[in-house]
Structures are given as structure tokens and as C-alpha cells.
Image 1 (tube, rainbow, N blue to C red):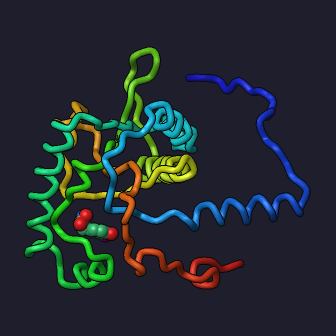
Image 2: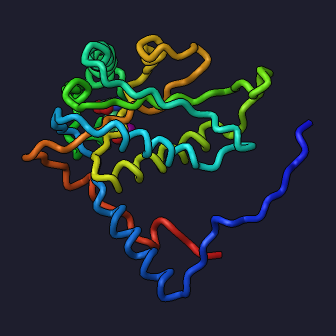
Length: 224
Ligand code: IYR
């Protein structure tokens, strides 16, 4: 059993109320500008920026702080092509029969279809894997806890970090996406959760109005 080792909390900062308001507003203003993009330029993105954003994602809280995630960054054109072919095969099946009518109705205002050129055109794809278990520094296997929650939080941090750095993203979820394990050389027990498409929007990029609609504060929250 590992014993806790306590240390002083030195990284926390507090702000006077006016500054709290200002910071909360500016963070909201920053995040509300984010839009999901499906039309990517092929311009490469700086590797150091991606690595720093991955470090930011890795600061996310997780069950027992076991950090049950792996981020596979795909830049190879050959790998991207394989992913596009595999994903489009699943999407064809989805759009032409597998998806229930209600699902297709919900997607209609977003204008999505089975063609996924962005999987080849975007400079980077980040396949996010969830690990049911991991290895401790001493080599012992350890079970992970709250895995979907932890990986979801880390993914949110990553999207926010990439946006803040001036990069656009698309949370793409071909289903099923087991083909990512082989292409990314990840073990079968890791579960791909999201394929994040990363890059710059094309100069004439358009986004669907529906995708930018936000529910009101009263709809998304309540005070008890
Ligand atoms: N995976 C498909 C369908 C799709 C599903 C949802 I839920 C979306 O928000 C968007 C698309 C596709 O990528 O087209």
C-alpha cells in the first residue's frame, strides 16, 4: 500500500471578486468562439504546440489520479488515408441504413454525410484511447476507475487548449472505430473513444448555424 505524502498547496491562486468576474467572462468569451470545424486546411501545425496541449490535457483530474488515457497523434499521410477509408466504410453503413431515422433527423441541420475528406486533409488526427487498466512504475497491473469520465474530462481540456492556441478541432466518432488500435499500434484492451481532427480551418470554411446554438443558462443549470 502506498502511504500519502502531503505537501503544501502552492499553485492555487485567489482573485478579488471583480477580477474573478472579469476572468470568468473572458474565459467564457474565449470558449464561446469555438466552433466545430469540418473543412480543414492542410497547413502543418507546430509540433511543440500540440505537445504542450497534450500536457495540458494530461493535467485533467482522473479516478485515483491513474490518468487512464493515451493520445495517439497521427500525422502520416498513409495512416490518415487508412483511417479515412476505414471510417468512411463505417459511415456509409451508418448513413445508408444503420442509423435510426430519429438520429438522422437530429444530424440533418449539421449537414454531415459519409464523406470524410478532413481525415486526410487535416494535418493531424489525435486518436484518444481509454485504458481500463495500466501499469504501475514497479510493473504491477492496476485497474483504472471512472475511465469514461476521466477521459472525457481530459478530452475537454485538450479541445480547450487547442482552441486557445488558435487551432480548430472536430470531435469525430466513426462507429465502431476498432480499426484505430491497429493503425495506431495500440493494444486491444485500449478503447478508442474519439478521433480528434486538428488543424486550421480552410480560408472559406463555413459552419452550420445549428451547431453554434447554445442552450440558455436556465436550461442547462439550476440552483438547489
Ligand atoms: N459519426 C457520424 C455521424 C455523426 C453522429 C453524431 I451524434 C454527430 O454529432 C455528428 C455525426 C459522422 O461523423 O458523420
